[in-house]
Image (tube, rainbow, N blue to C red):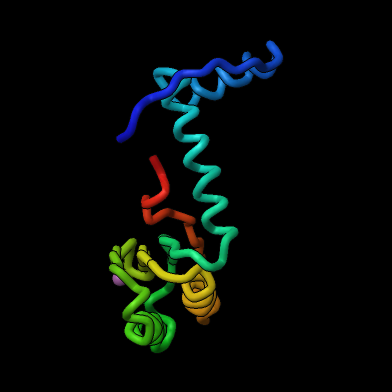
Length: 139
Ligand code: NI
């Protein structure tokens, strides 16, 4: 980590009260840590808006493993995109349902396309792509 800088900011009192309440609810011990996280979250948001760069996403899906050939279809999509699928975690939730967390890394459009392909597969009940980061441009 580089040099640390200090600066002060001015905000309306009401907003300050809301900020304190938010930090308390989220369990932040100090404002600096919260602001570091807020800034990083904005940087990741920007990273995902730029389609040229490399992104990392975590796709979580819940599906019914009784749906015919679904597990095989998901595995097939993963195998067809080896360069982009970094890892996956499988959890047997109950007798019927499975959860998978799939880490995707690559060009945003490709990560999005793979994610959409998996989510839209018949039998996938819930799918959500979390915008993570390579961490490269985050201090
Ligand atoms: Ni399972």
